[in-house]
Length: 303
Image (cartoon, rainbow, N blue to C red; front, side):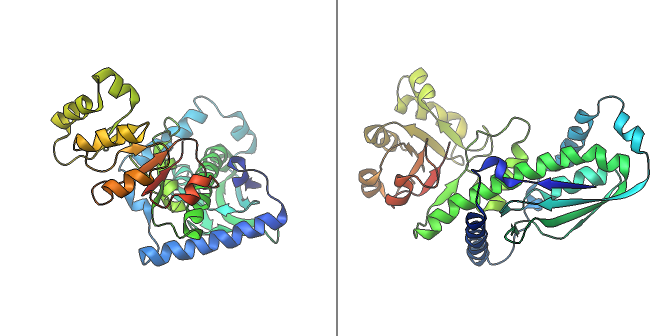
């Protein structure tokens, strides 16, 4: 039995030469990240107590009734090989392991979380799963989908973070709250594995006032004032501003860092450089010229 995990599902197709360049760049990114943090981080320790229950729910969702394919193969002990066939960052091991642990199988990993999958010499064995054939086949699609999604997010995060590193940028590349419903934990976890920041994790994590909040409240000042009533002193308030003038209004409303500014923020940053953080969002990707040219930003968050 064998299955492939392909990280290219979330990225444009790569030639062999480009894949080798990706491997080298990703390896350099890993070294830089590890040097910055001082050691390898085990992000599994961040997962909430109920994360394994969610994994079990994914398995149950895939087999709500009888499993005829499992009946066909039975309980014969088998080995299944997980192959990596495109360059990328491996992410999602805890979720992959949890699927097969739930089903009574074991996983032997040949690569570790955050490792670069080097396919310059062809596809590589990432892991070997052992257990009853019907249990392996029952869990394979759930495990593969989760691992591929997490690895794709981590690989894209690493690519974006590497652009900043290459240009000597000291800000943060951050993901948004635009996660796949029901899959937030996996995707936010994968951002961290890839070397990006999570920004806010959910609506309860930090206050973010966008254009609709401002329009409904009547003004930025009114929206911020009402938010402060509930947020207290411990929650950061962000305001999404469409122009520099709106950014100045947010600051005058005593927004503590950071308001959102959606276009070049040079003037804003020099006026309030030591009081607030500048975050740019929307329509940007790691090759976007603004991400390269405007060093006054503290964070770049892509939609």
